[in-house]
Each structure stands twice: as C-alpha cells, then as structure tokens.
Length: 332
Image (cartoon, rainbow, N blue to C red; front, side):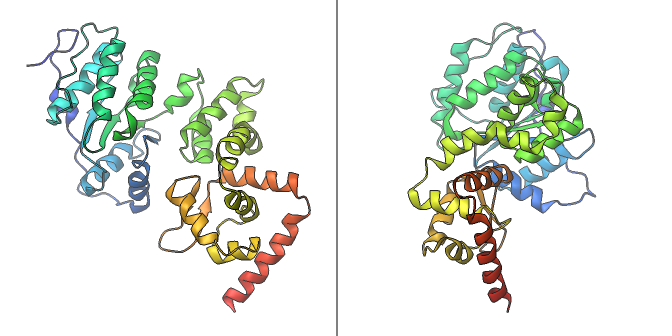
C-alpha cells in the first residue's frame, strides 16, 4: 500500500472516473468543445455547484474521443498541501498503469512541499511519452495553495504537447492566482468573453488587478478588448503572412465568414486556403460545425475591427455594402 507524505494511505477511489447518472442530458456541443479543447495544453471547466461539470467531463471520457489515455484525480481539501497533491497526481498515473519513460520519477517526501527536481523529472518523462495523456483534476477549487498553482503552471510550460490538462473547478484558478476574489457573475463574464482562452483571461485579470474600479472594468467589454489588444496585434496578427494580415481585418466586420465572401471583401482568390490554415493552426478562427463558414474569437474580432477603423476609417462602410451585395446574390 502506497502512502502519502503524511503517512496516510492514498485513496484509490479518487482515481476512478465518476459514474454518469442513468438519466442525464447529453450535451453534444459541450462534449465537442472538450474534444477540441484537449487538442491544446489546457482546458478549463467552471461553473457553480451542481452545474454538471463532473458529469460532463465523465461523459466525455466515456465517449472515447480523448487524444490518449485519461488520468482522473478527484481532489479534496486535504490535498491542499503541495506534497500531498503531487503524491496523488503521481499515484493517479501509477493506478492507471501508465508507464513513464525512464521509470518511476519518485514521490514527495514532505507534505508541505514538492521538490522542483522531482517535478522536472516528471515533466521530462511526460514530454517523451509516445502519445498524449489527459490529466483531469476534478475539484481544483478545493486546492487553494499558490505553490500548487505555480507548479502546475511550470509543468504545463515544460511537459510539452504530450500533456493535456483538464481542470474542473467552481472558480477560475487563473483569477485566484492573481489575488482576485471575483464573484461568480464576474468569473462567468470574463470566462465567456475570453471563451476559455487562458492568456486572454490572464491579461484581463492583470488589468482588473491594477484598476481602481475592478468590478466596473471586469464588466466592460471595451476594457477586456484593451487588455488583450496589444498581445493579439503583435503576437498574432503581425506574425501572419501579408495575405492573412490583409484578409483578417477586412473580414472581421462579419459575425461569420465564408471563403467566397472573404474573397469578395478582399478582391483575393485564396481566402479558403488562408482561413483553412488559420483554423488548423487554432489562431482564433474556428469552423462553424458542418458548414464552410468560420467565425473569429469575439475579442480577436473586436481588436481587428478597431485596427481596421484606425488604419482605414472609410473602408468599413464599403465592406458592409460589398458583403450585403454578396449575401443578396447568394440567397437569390
């Protein structure tokens, strides 16, 4: 029997995927979003108590659409100590018989800390897995330790693309790490506005943290847009090809974009190739299910529209007229 650093047994029931109620509503749209989310390093599921967060994640695990094996850990308040938390994470991998390259990385020896070299060995082992692994941490709101939050962030930074972390929590851990005690309404507002984009949420949190009116700023879409504008313009838009930099601001005036409509707005003939490339690279452009249309992340679209108005003030109205003519022909 393996023990935690406190000397207590590690409880195996915490490693089991919870059962899905026999009578439950299948939420296919959310299941699909989970599948899409685990193509990246971090997926966050938040909501109030009894909102169905755990049921959704457990249902998703049973769909078999995860990119690799799923490691599940249900957290409790007693897991707040960093050494205990990481002992449970390592045991969750052992429980699922997932063999890490290089063998057992060890386990924390003290409940109040986890050695950095231990976590470095763990990250190195994850990086060299033959396929991605999904680690689900259910009940992360029970763990308030900043050291745990920081070590999870370091693990994501160093484990490479083979680790997909799914966090289930009643509150957003990114906001808590910035010292914000936001209301459920504010958390929902910021999470919805950023659509779970972790970097965007962090930028908004930093802006709220530095504001004289945190509540008002959190509720302002314009403020959220300002908080992320520089990042999106310099790190996303400026990094694209000249063709994409021309297409993105012009098509941002639309709630949804069709390649042929994008060609009409830009005078190009390669919009489909550009949009497909942006979608595949997950650069804030996503397909509209079962159609040839796509949509931009709302914050990205808002920043692009502001960029367009700043650089070509008279162009937006002409683009709207051009889009209206295209749509009229398309439905006639």
